[in-house]
Image (cartoon, rainbow, N blue to C red):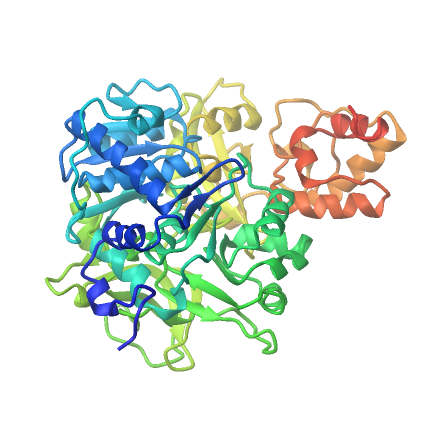
Length: 591
């Protein structure tokens, strides 16, 4: 029988929650580093003590077992202590990104039924606590107990983009989580091994980064800069040399295109979330110390449903999503639900112990997607993804069956974006469309038709929308058009919409075009126009308002260097217009 790090049989470990698995490491290695950042480090013993304080203070607040606690915190060791404390009291946590707009935050709080919000920020939520409140010594003595979150109890709820126009919460139990972190040998983190923690809590990659690590006696090594950039990640990986690292597709492509040698500092690299570049994956696989994997999995099936190990010596036209995780079965079916022959394309069905409990307060959508059985091994989830099996037990991804798309690794439902755009008082109708046919080039564009007599620019609507949706759902640009083109059936003809990235003046910017007034401004503006695919760029135009993003920022830095300009990606965030960047270059980087 296969064994895990503690010497316990896998079958025995699957009966425990991650809390119990963590506590076994507390007993075995209390002085081993559990969580570290650039400014702090907690051992297993210290993390256990901190989480016990959280537990005691939650009990003082009468947070009952089976309830939900919302957590809106950034990456740091204290955040993990708070999450453990929530589990110790028997509650589930629901992560809310601190950068979410108030409307989305408030919806999640209400929909999840959260009884408490733990946050550093000021909000209007009535029941609120700060990490300092919960980590302080409890006003009542803590009760010495062996904490054990039952495996059939809810562990967390993560909200994803919803087809009904609002985010939907995926409910995952401790049994789902334990099975994910303990069953598959490809995720067998060794005691003391460092695992990079880069993802925000609201992204389920953080589940692997944190809980797979603490269940195996590893060290969660936190990237604690507020903004994730290629330069920041390069410094982080060089300094920490993580044994394990997960990168979303967008981050992976950015690093691989810019700092490929940084993967020499990584043991096992896992990349996923969208279609991966075969050549970049092969290049990275030739540099990592241990292995490089492509991973696939919806939030609804507990992080990863399949993985594929990349061989740097083997050429491939596409990167497969791989073979199913242990305890999971993948099937490709036709419209009638019958399994199709190998090589045929159909909808991907995921069956097994990772299948979540469904969506919060959405019984009809849960019934449409999930089939929950008394035996978890038989539960199924309809992904809505198109896939094929070839060769045997190796699966390939062929896109979405519905309109849902991945933008830089995040699931985006264009219908939700369209509803948000349509909510503006001056918008008569709206469409959200993905432009670009590869993971590197895909951008979301918003098209709006204004109400009669409304006088508004696309830039003004874009700015308004930024306060309504998470940043990853906000279109790169919003373009005002006279009418929505229709096809022969009277439905919106998305193929007939104008391409916004040909003419600068079609982007709907709030500011007028101002031409360059110096040779350096002219050179910088020309490079920007080339990288962004525009006819011209004005000196007061903002790179990100023109549709630029972190990946195009890397390309921009490279092209500027060919013109003799030395710029780092982080400096684009500080000098976002042609004029600002030009002044900075003229002064030698001191402006």
